Each structure stands twice: as structure tokens, then as C-alpha cells.
Image (tube, rainbow, N blue to C red; front, side):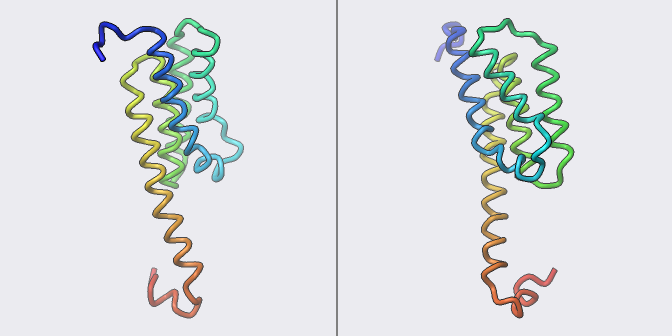
Length: 138
């Protein structure tokens, strides 16, 4: 698409798509931190910008994005961290459309990391207990 033909409707569609990416992986964060609504609030702020056709208020977008990234820094869980970062990037798409690709990338990272963790958990749980130290010594 020619950037000169990038309309406000295109921008809004891109923001909604950017929000859908972290929304799909946000359960990785919310499962670990059910009381921490910062990433969810970031997504909601971006969707409100689209839905209500609000003017872009940098202070609102910046705060929502930085709060989501602060939530990401608060966890050692890689999938939860990536999900929160995806939310921070999604709301930043309201300001700079290029943040949409980062939102998508962090959502993929959350899925990949969680998939590995889920598979490892399944392996551990399905291995006879007396053999766990053989396969998983640490």
C-alpha cells in the first residue's frame, strides 16, 4: 500500500488488528497476574480510540503503553512478559502505525514460549515420577 494513501480508516483497522494480536495471548499474563489490568487497559484504550473516534491524546497512549511495558518487566514468565509487551505495542499503534508489527511479533513470541513451556510441563507430568530426575536433572 502506498503510504500516501493510508487513510484514517486504514489506521483504525490497523489498530484493531494490532489489538487482536495481544488479546489472543493476554491469558498468559492474566493467568499469572489476574489482578494486574495494565496490559488489558492498554488494549482497551486503543480500541476506545477506534470505537469512539477519539482524538489521539499522546499522554493517554503513552501512559497506557508504558504501563503495559512496566507490567511486562514485573514478571519472570517469558510468555506473560511477551503478552504484556504485545499490549504495549498495540496501543502505541495509535500514535505510530509501525508499532503494529511489534505487537504481532510479541504475540508470536508469547505463543512460542508458552508452547514450549506447555509441552515441557506435559512431558514432566506424563513421565513416571521415579524417572523425572533422569530426564530432568535440574
